[in-house]
Image (cartoon, rainbow, N blue to C red; front, side):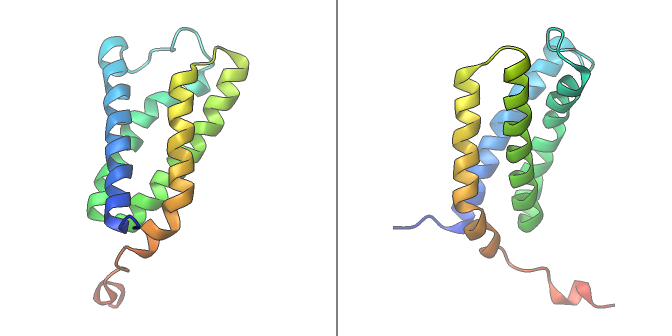
Amino acid sequence: MSISPQAIRMVYAACLAGAAFNHARILLGHGLWWDYGGVHPFYAAFWTSLTFFDALAVLLLLARPRAGVALTALIIVADVLVNTTAALAYRFDLPSFAAQCGFLFFVLATVTRAWHGCAPADSATLQH
């Protein structure tokens, strides 16, 4: 039994919606310019930006699936890379990092199926 491309995209959307919710909770609790306890401004800006990029990816997965799949892959690859470097410089939150790595592996294992399961852009919109 294989998972459908639509189901894959819904898993992506559910994971990203949960992440966006967590980032939004942080923003509501600490404000837009919180420094996450004194981390380098790059990390703080990146993590804050995920509030918006995660939500955008969810919307794109529903409205423009190929753009959503591409943004999902970009987000999770960047997130794991950034969090790996942050863990080396600061503290390591193993449960969160493990969840992100699990999502990364799922995305890498399914992204081709998710992409090819999307309808290509309407050819009428590509012509003038």
